[in-house]
Image (cartoon, rainbow, N blue to C red; front, side, top):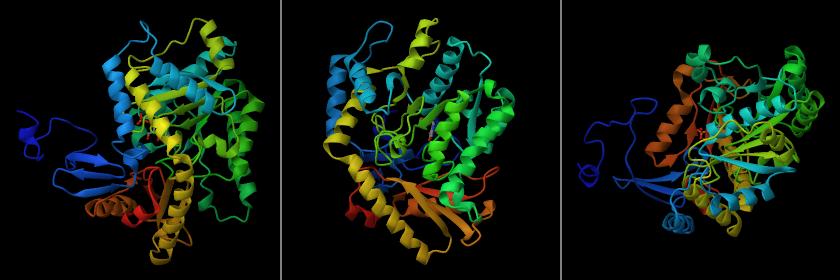
Length: 435
Ligand code: PLP
């Protein structure tokens, strides 16, 4: 049966499966911030898929660059050939990454990027004679990926629970959900309060056993664009330095411009020890991610038997050609600036909705990584009972009206409901009306 014969979709059963039995319309085409299904319904992609399509859909410059690469060489295995697209993108990332982060390891997605960070960290401590360091502290809630290593450090009970017996139990500290706190601390002190929980946990675990601390600088789907007070970021860096714990920034969602800087770490002038980036790197044009680390961490590993880790598609020339072209578009079109200014304007517009809708308890985020927290009572921030599936219902209502926003199931282990509003960085103020 040809694709054309089945184009209207849903006339037959699907052999594909994802998380559940629910089905969505077939995509027909997409352009800029809009997507159309085969029935002609138009959607505004106000979540950039899963915060991926940062430069919008079907940019001809990226398509042309990918086509050019395909005509040259579609695949060159890294153990047989180097390729210009990957070499070039690695240089460009090194130039843009914070501080001494300059060695780039390509992968095909966020979970792979996080796995790579964990393994590099571990091999580094082995190389420097600190084999007892193996624990990775992370935050609860958090999301770092669905492969078993990344899942073990993910603070999200529903995804974690079925596989718990198959994973190492890694320690978690509370994420800095300051907006829920009703104490009279200043923002600064609240930031310190949450950061100091890391120190307490390191001491509880035994500092000599702790390998790394991993955090999303601006929370993603698990926390709803959570931003901590400035003091948090500085104090976390100090604590990691003090105890020789590697600081890993998971910038899978925040990296490549979404928060208004190329890397979110730049907002606080923090240089993590290792950084993971993915979604916006090739912005949905191809599967791509990267781990970026300093030579002081990479060299000892390469000198002690090499990095025992890698993927077949690492440094794929087509994916890297897409990554280079996406970076060109971001820079040529001033999309970092647009993410910062449009993000501030959109956040203000979402904030205005609070006057009309008492169930919006908080609007937060940075750049175009924004979220609204839905609550039963704004004064107490009491959550809506999970059985109401409030965020899911809101997202479904919006979808039926042609507006795509993003939600995370909150069932079990996590308090609160939020929806993410994260349109492409190309969004213009007049397109806000569609949101
Ligand atoms: N880390 C963060 C912060 C994420 O948001 C995600 C995906 O949402 C991942 C890791 C995993 O990325 P992927 O789904 O590409 O494996």
